[in-house]
Image (cartoon, rainbow, N blue to C red; front, side):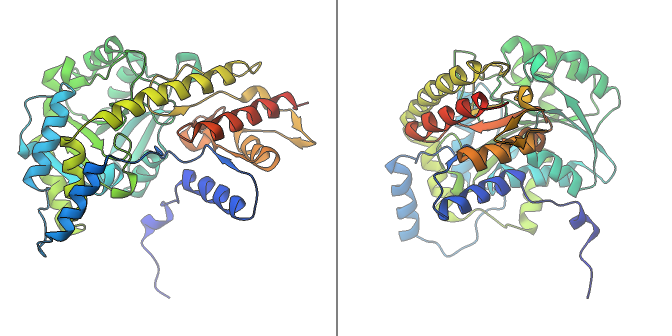
Length: 399
């Protein structure tokens, strides 16, 4: 039998989806399961989005779309990023994809030859590691433990950039930690980045409108405009507009990068579907009341989750200020037992929690921090409170 390509030996299923599927399976078997596993926003877009999609169906052109994205979609995204403070871009700087994940894969193909180095902080989104491994990149992970609030320090970045990596990949607000960098923190990192002109910068900032406590969203290009020529801003409809299944992502980038991504699109996806394009234009251009409302709701959910976690003796959880995740350090449980089951690490902790209490969380080792676990708190309030109460109870029963 013929063999698959060598790169498939480096490709792994998403660790998050493995946990989510297990929770779904247990629920189908009749178990009372609360899933904090998958990062789904759990709300729907406004009626204007569905109206635009229905109209697109009725007026189906029967033609292929643009490899880059329809002009109206590019223009809507340009206005969207202008509201974030990212100005001076044109259509030539924009490209689209089937969600931000596909765009990140395209960027890896466009920027990284086999053996080139990519650097990113840990905790990281699981797909960063997976994509880098598939394309054969050399990976330099910068540990950012809870003791430094899961944030990258300028000195760490400086040491990493001295190695002249091809790509620096940065995520703000953070999945999995929910941490958000302040303006001063972004400025300090940007001051380091300007000194190393041989490195591309990718900012994966799809939670940019989900920021709490008045911290605001800040980008390297805003503070050091000279970084524009090598910085790629990545965004998506999925989280902001409650549209993960519509699969629409974007970049704002130097023209040569946007062109490269567009060329890759022409060789695999061709274009976004007309229906998804129409829905995306409506989401970006229409009323923004639902995203604003959900941001406030997520902040309130954050408060309940955080209060529950810090009430547990020994658990350390830097206060998240964005997205809809908490990332507590649960290593206080290591070496203890629950109903005779020994907790040796984050994986055995999550397995015991799911078995004993029916609460599904993703082990922190999936994100490069094995002392922790990720809680996605976007579920309905009743399930959120029930799940957090079970976690508190689980810790109280450890011996």
